[in-house]
Length: 468
Image (cartoon, rainbow, N blue to C red):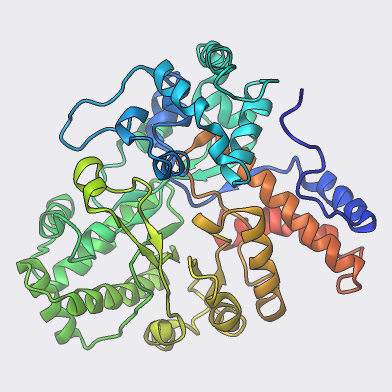
């Protein structure tokens, strides 16, 4: 049996479906650009076999284990590591069986599409994962993982990935990127500058991280001038290792353009741990504007993705740490929040700021009108909870009329789950072709223009926006 319908996600109406099929046939095999993601560069540096199916598909993927958690499956039973090193399940087969018993919980979700795509197209499975087929599927995938053609570099090439960006903290030594570069392998794996740990006073270890950045750069990060200079030095270090973008994940989209003496005073309070919540938010906001100014000089594309209320469960945070599925979207303001940064530097053609959101109510009301007029702004694709067929279509429906296609940046997969990358891009390509087919069938886009737009949405926009 096949796990996937060849016409999945295409329109039901015959004329539109035929147009979508034709468009998709022209772009389905184009190279993958993955300019914003969280795969581990160590995979490509060491090129070791993935340990087992559970460690590949279940334990590291919060899209998967958060759904099982919602139905009472314990994270420890899925092998998710505890912060205190306490006991969790380590038997990959037992984890996989538990996963298989609960696989039905993913019906109707994008995770199910991604997983079935990987099972069928990457590993050649022809049986649906169930409790009864669990051992067969486990053994088949485990056998594949033992072969050279399923190691990270071979899969990278098989997936037709032209470039992939990982995301590292500002204080990362980038050792794995150096190992990739020095190995002679031609796969393009670049980094992205993620300075949250040295910008957010509310992050654990903020003062220690700032001090470490000073040690790495030789700058006196106990002073405001030295702190800014250290950022410039670290950004240059990341650019040397291939970075074309910075990445900023703040709770809000707030920006500030404070007088330098006020910013310095907030910085010194942050180092002492004396900031109020509002002062910490103001400092984060001012630093977004400082990062934008630095981008004018060094060319890094700036990504801002606010709106995640992180670590909603105190118990899960204490036991398993951050990024364990308990990050929840919240309402986000952009019009007022971004105005200080935009008025400071937003008309400068050297700057590109890519905006993401978890608040879909902002698409038509705020984000599309902003991107439809400010030269520096581009809209990132439907992200995280909205990285789904319906979410992608809603994005196109609510932003295209005001921002057009060319103030967006195509698709990026934003994932740690390596084998889901071709699946995610395939979903995006099918949804975009379906949307274009609808525009053609309803007389809103000329049929001879649609293939060019499809190619841009698949490849061209990301390549240009991220300077790849």
